[in-house]
Length: 198
Length: 198
DNA sequence: GTCTATACGAAGATAGAC
DNA sequence: GTCTATCTTCGTATAGAC
Picture (tube, rainbow over the protein chains, first blue to last red):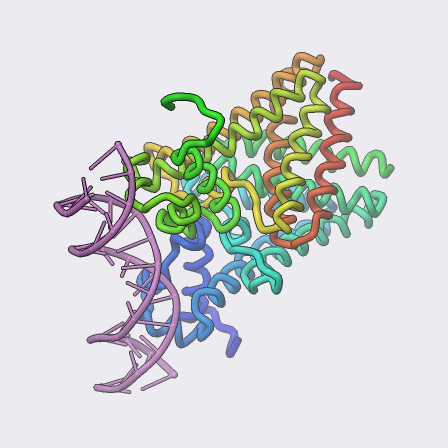
């Protein structure tokens, strides 16, 4: 938020570390203590950078994780919905395989763990916004390629939901098969939606 | 495990309470202490009934939550895959609406929070088994109704993944729309798979 | 401005009284 | 066999030394 840099700042390292740890063990199992250690920062520094404590950290970790997905989507959606979907799938497939099925989606982790309330707490709101943004990007691209708006929105929701669920399922079962089955189905669906704009 | 009863035993109450609390706040935010209080049992009793502690509780809570889904599926799948899907959807839609979007799926919560390991820990293994069982039931029904086996398995994986993801998304956003969009897409897909057995 | 040292509560788990 | 009282460890968060 100050000066953009090549070298990641301590603050950025902490956020990235939080996203990674949350995607592996979940939000509540990620302590600020370990987080500081993992990021090679003193415990006090985390509260210096994140005065609102763990909730702020969780919120920014969600936004960080979401932004990575958003960037990949934006970059490839210019080549069409199928290319965007493939980028989305490739990203998550890589997370699963590169981590030996130990990492998942930090956004989903926060969405599932944080209790919801009347004024939705910031981490949950950030998670909801992440899901909504991904859906929006996919739906916009589908519409631009001739898919009926309602169908585009529903198909985008299905895509995001299915991929999030599939990541969790493959992580739990320690095999890539469920994810690949879902990926194959989604590719067929999006392809069909373009052939028959409904 | 001893004598079947009408009146739920203390042990059963604890497991049911665990599943509910986990579906609302996540696994790690569910303490054995609160669980005992919520189930009107002394703390010591939980360790009497569940000598392996919290891991055993989590495992049984997952199995309990899974069994509820399994029963609903089995009951309705006799009327065909679409009826089974509708029962699956109705169950989760009810969880979301009846709780005011405060509850979700305990199986997913455990799947996302518990760290995976070389010898997958029992709670994660139970979650993986739950997902696999639901997929199996759906896939079997689809095959029995003429769907190609590979397609049946993939469609079942898509269904379970999408519903799990949709429950989390609707819970986070506090609106039913994402879930309903996903539900509508899945119904169309399963219906189409029966019309064109491929 | 950075970080060390600490406060304070709650976690999981158990020992041993009833 | 049930449960109370307690042990130990770790959580979030902060006060105040550098």
